[in-house]
Every structure is written in structure tokens, then in C-alpha cells.
Image (cartoon, rainbow, N blue to C red; front, side, top):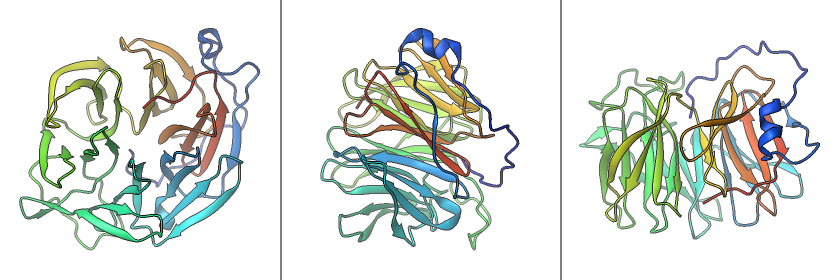
Length: 296
């Protein structure tokens, strides 16, 4: 997930879906990109609960928002730890990359935050950025370094910018430490694959997830980095940046969706039937009706 929110909105307000997107039939017939709101400073980290409600962050303003499956927008949590990436666990807790103090949080249904981790090798984390939870309850999370104006520290303490795995018992290990700048990630529980992006090198990789949470068989998926990402029921991977690019499971670009902002940060599927694509893009959030459901 991205990084800096000091972006200048430079694109025009006229937009459309690409012809390629319509040809592949992923987008619902006659669907139009819908602007939910543009009242934010920089939106990030959309996560969907079991009901289909989507939660996302406005990181500069330190808030988590909720967009209900009925289309109602409301503030869910103030003083949200400058959260970036979000994800729900199987118990309905909201996990958050709270990089206000470089921590990983678990927020229960009463909005009580518990710090799950804040360091590695007795050194402050760089700033957890994005995360995904496997079927066992283990958490994969990226830890790049994007210097924030609200930090009191200015220098990186870790030796590398890594991806970690926290198992259900709370034990943590490094699963990737060769990236220039790790960022978005998503898993496919059906194929047991994990997708990680090195946005610093403009590449995305796919791995086999091992029973202990480690990763094997590292393979280049595509020559594109991404801020955030999601997956649909067909196994297509949605990468963000300049709009949304969709790649099939073979790593082939099959469609592009234009977004009228200069940066598209993150994406997920929401709604009661999980067929609403929810997109966080700079100061705005958008929805788009799809023919496919979100994957898991």
C-alpha cells in the first residue's frame, strides 16, 4: 500500500471503463464508476467483513471509515493509529497496520485496540503497510519504510524492508527480505498461493504457502508493482497504481479500469453479494459493479 499522500490531483473528471474491461466480461453490463465521496485526504486499506460492509482509512486524518452494504458512509473509529492496511480475521476482529507508532493492531468489535507486534530483533518496525490473514489465522504483513511527517523518529532501524508472518500462537518470522520496497499482498486460499508486490522494483511475485507459514517456489508473476491488491473468485489479481490493472492467474494483463485520480491506492470486493468493487484513490472512494465475486 502506498506511502505518501502528498499527491496532486491532476486528472480530468471525465472517465470511462476501457474497452478491454468490457470484452472480458468481469464488469457488469452498463456499469459506471460511482464516486462515493471525495471528502478525504488520502484513502487506503479497504477491508470487507462477513456482512459485506467495507472499512477503509483516511490515514492523514487518522480515521477509519465504514461504507455499509446498503451504501451508508460513516466514521467508524477516531484516533485509529494512523492505520493503513486493514483486514478482518475469522472472529470479526479488524487487523490494522497502525504505523502511527509502527505497530500491528487487532481491533475488537468494541473498538479496543491490542498491539500484536511493534518490533523485530528489539528494533522498531519500519511501518507495517499491508496484510492478509490465512485460513489458520496467521498474518502476513509487509514492512516497507515510508517516512511519515507525524513520526518523532526519522531513521530506519531495521536492516531490510521485509515481509513477515505471525502465526496463530504469536510467533513471528521473516518470509521475504530481498525486496527493495514491499507493499501490497493478497492470498488465494484455493490454490494456496500468496502474491507479494515489490513496488520499488515494479514487480509482483507469487509463492507457495507452506504449512508453517514460510514461502516457497518464488516466481515472477508480472512486471508491475502495486500499492494494494485484491483477488476475484476466478483467481484474477487486481493491481493498483495508475488505475486498476487485472491479471489472470497466468500473469497476463486482461483488462484495465480507468480511475479519475492520479493514484489508486487499494481495492477490495464488498457488498452483500461481494460483487461491488470498492476502490480507494487519493482523496476519493469509488465503487463499480462486477459480474464476478471477490475471492478469498
